[in-house]
Length: 109
Image (tube, rainbow, N blue to C red; front, top):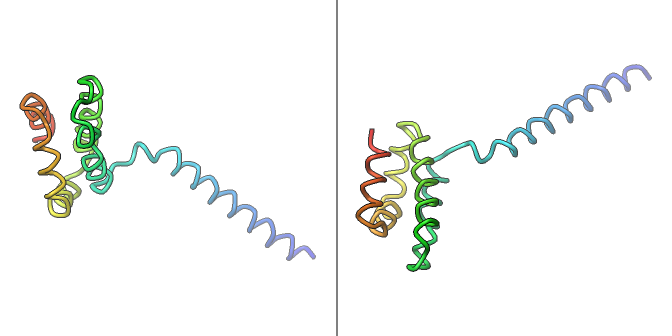
C-alpha cells in the first residue's frame, strides 16, 4: 500500500508541475516573439482589407508590428526574411511614406 501511495504522490506532483508550466506558457504567450508571429501580424494588417482604416488604428497596429520586429533576435530576423519575403514586401508596399520611414527608423539596427 505505501508504494502505491508514493507513486500516486509523484504522479500528482508531476501533474501540478506541468499544469503550472502550462499556465505560465499561456500567460506569457503575448510576450514571446517569433518570426512566424511577426509575419502573421504583417499578413493580417487590417488596412490590407480596409483601405479607409482610421489613422490612429493604423498607427497602433504598425507599432505592434514594429515592436514584434524589434524583439526578434538576429537569427529570427534572418528566418523571417527568408520565409516571408512576399509577405514583408506586400506589407511594406501597403504603408504610407511616413509609415515606411517610421518602420525603417525603428527596425533597422
